[in-house]
Image (cartoon, rainbow, N blue to C red; front, side, top):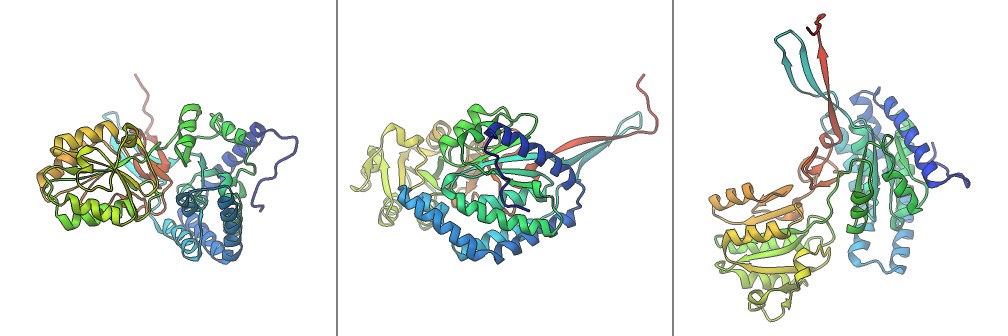
Length: 426
């Protein structure tokens, strides 16, 4: 079982994607014949192969890191790219965790019996062949494969050039482990070219690829959403807000604000805008904690009055996903003003409030129209693993099919099963 499907010198990117997609669809039909236990054991075998190939995977990642530094990738991008023994162990453990999750395939959502005796059931089934287009994070190679396989889907992976060596090494290990458990090779395929035309071919593969999931920067996701003729499950930005209400506990406010921004600045759950209630007495302490922690703050005039180190914000700052140690901060006059700011600038990913007032918290939960809304918690918890879903395929901010962290259930659809006893329609 080869790690990468070979590319003929005469084969165009469109022909390549057509060939891989057709092979993936055929493999998915074979995969559907494997029961839940067999798919779980295949994932455990893949996790074992990742652990066995640690040295090769880390060596490949070293090549990617060296090339990334030479290309001038930011510290945040390099952090996304970097693997070490602990991170690789976490990737393997995530496969084991997904294997242990309840299998959604075959789950009966609901049943009903019609007056004519027909018995109707809605049953969860795999979506089919899922295309994943991603940048920088080599863990996506394993996470996507695990979630797709556990939910009975085949997957076509197209990673970014930043992580090409890491992706190929991880995929090779996965392929060997899955093959040992009887999973068809074409169930998990890695596009063997970095030609951007291959991405366009995936986006145009309506009828062959059933859903596209982009994981990456704004330009990648925007292109996918603009050009795809295939259904897309994605979020464009993670412009996440934390509103510190007048009734917030001051120590909690400091702890949550620091963690939400500075724990890992380069992830999509990082806070990008902090809203401070004008009546909150602990605002100077929150601002000082962030500045002292190495975060650059950009604020309006009222915010700048809290600390002379705060730089002036521009209009663009309120709509910027920094993915860095930079934060926009505004002082707002109460809950209504905070809700209005979030409605105007949130990307509908994750928004949070810090407050000891239960009534205010419930109103915030009800009125903020984001995929994830939090009370008294860091936005960095916006993660499928933290939600108990195992590895996630991504965070969806749309309103159809799936929303928030997308894991196994979000990778299924349903079909109607109708059982009769000879009924005919009059």
